[in-house]
Image 1 (cartoon, rainbow, N blue to C red):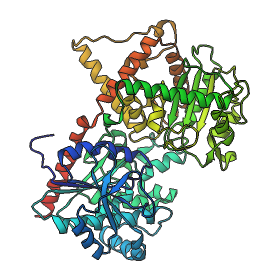
Image 2 (image 1 turned 90 degrees about the horizontal axis):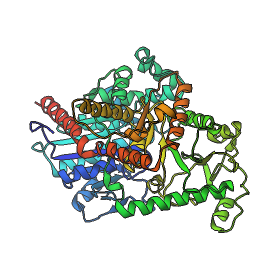
Image 3 (image 1 turned 135 degrees about the vertical axis):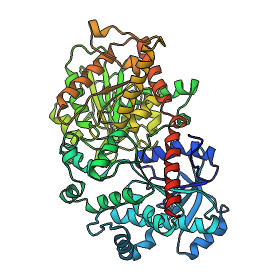
Image 4 (image 1 turned 90 degrees about the vertical axis):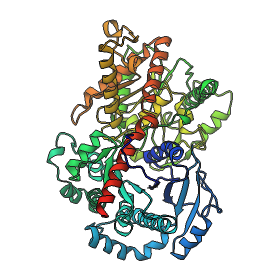
Length: 577
């Protein structure tokens, strides 16, 4: 952070994922909160949607004494809010707002949005209305707070995340011009839609017209609010260089600042606790697999996984499974492999036959359950891509198979009925993760993996992958300048399968629009190479992964946010002269 930067006195952040754990933005906000809370105690205020009025929200504790006078004043302004603390490190202040009452004003709100900023809401459908009403309500909440507590002597920043909060940023921009506005897109609507619809994104990015593609892909309204917000706020930001290029081509706007996503190591257990929880996680994973498959997998098993949203191509689930199938019959594999696919699907609850077998201490390990590759029932297994791919490829998980695949189609929230462990607790038990993303603006899953000392494979199309490559290149440059360090040398480049994970902890595979087969082969070879590592080399790889994660902590990345605050505050000041 430069000493010349303008610093905010108050920061408001609005997101659909405040106290609402549905995706990667939740991780961005929740892991960064403590860093900002330490710098601005109780002057970093998060605004989120209130879905939990009739039941307890485990992530939120209401404090009716906090700003009670303002809450009563807000009620007179037709704002139904709850104020409390987010149950994460730092325990920042959160305002949850009920946005349902604003549906009655929807047409007037959209009309004003068109008149003021030419945002086209005519083609809205699905979640557009819900997100927009929340965003409008969040803008009204910040406006009310500002007029109740603050004035133009304070430097105030409002940061909106993703298209879902763009309307609120534009509302603030017009109605409270003293507040500096920042808009962060974590993935463009058009870029994600192009990739998700099987069109080549990267080789033809220069030729795509964002507005034209919005019409073709039927996302006109989402694209419109995203594009117009990017053009009107004081500071437009995104999360990686790969997405910055996307913004320039599809939104016709170069981001002012790139805000890479960091992590807070408070989420990672230490010492004996780490060792014990890792042992527990491995035992649980193997117990479930053995009960499901009638197998006898032991602790020598190489446990690998991919996870994230169920985006078949974008997240690289397709190429991950292809690589596993190619590994299935490869004689070079030195350890039995258990490969997890942890992606939430339309599941109908835990399998009762699996639950009963797990409870039994004397089940026959030679007898597999029906469909011995899935832990939860699905509503429509016939249309599920993972299930159908495993069946088509003849994955049987029989005892003699060196690679066994287990589909976990549920959120790991600690109460899934089979594992009953949270995602991070299960992550501790893994040996290797694979995230071969085709479309990934940043990629929290690989960063979380290395933070928990699990080496990972990712790609050059993930923002984290690009950052990891740059970080590794800087380390090599320093090494060449004379800072001699010990590097792990495994020898397999000469006599066995190449594996570089024990050197860096992260292997970044080149991925493009058209090299699917090469990516699958590289993943296969990395898995096989990792299986050849000695216990000492595995430990070196785990330490290298942790060292990479240390470089991505928020204490290193928060400076980019201060740069964005400075840009926004200066432009707001100039705008208001």
